[in-house]
Amino acid sequence: MSRPACSARVAGPDDGVRHVGHIVNPVLETPTNGRRLPDEGEGCLSVSGAVMAVPRPDRAVVRGQDRDGNAVVVEGTGYFARCLAHETDHTQGDVSLDRLSKRDKKDALRQTAARRDEVHARRAAQEAAFSA
Image (cartoon, rainbow, N blue to C red; front, side, top):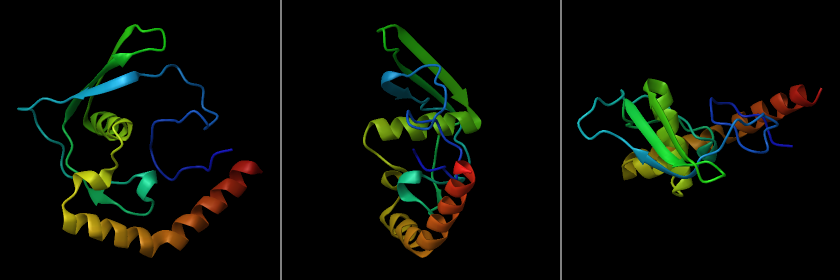
């Protein structure tokens, strides 16, 4: 069983969430001349406890294939564009830290260390409630 997450996210295969589809080999397209979202605080379960101002585009398009090889296109704006960019980063082996300056990355790692006990306690409480 997976641990309950303290975030908004795209569901993973072990979450007990019914999936309506997957995108195989996703490629993120972002406009080069479009608006950018404000650098809002963005968290990542791979860097639990840290909230970092990550620049993201206002619009994103992900192209790929479904499991049968059919073309799939998912478009989003605003917060959904942020989610598409964030999750597509993971498929490339990147996490939010990889988009930060060295100084901001160090700050994020300090946040993670400082909030480690709080994050683990919150997850344990949520897991207990989830299991009840």
